[in-house]
Image (cartoon, rainbow, N blue to C red; front, side, top):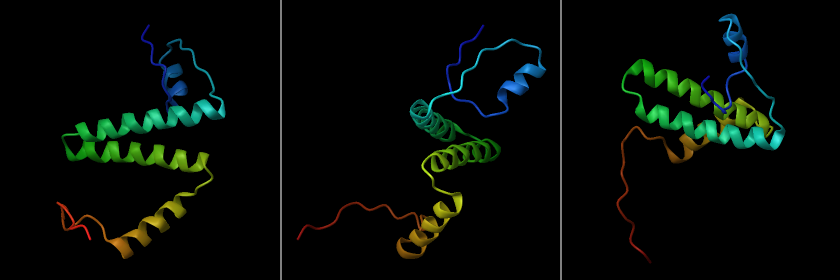
Length: 108
């Protein structure tokens, strides 16, 4: 029996159950949940970096956003607040479309 010991999406136990397989699961306390969300965030970033097709890229971006939203929800931050701050930063500091790579800045 494979051992996973990782945070999974809410419907995964239901999906496994439909296959007729036995499994064990637990519900995490708040502190462990936050820790495991951060582990999941790192896992999703690594998967995004390994994506080699547009479809994989979109899939991993969606997974990454789901974890970001879950972390936000845990901290009492709504997706709309994240989007508002993103838009403010875009307006005030720009995005990354121009591919600018800063090499150095002269000291005073």
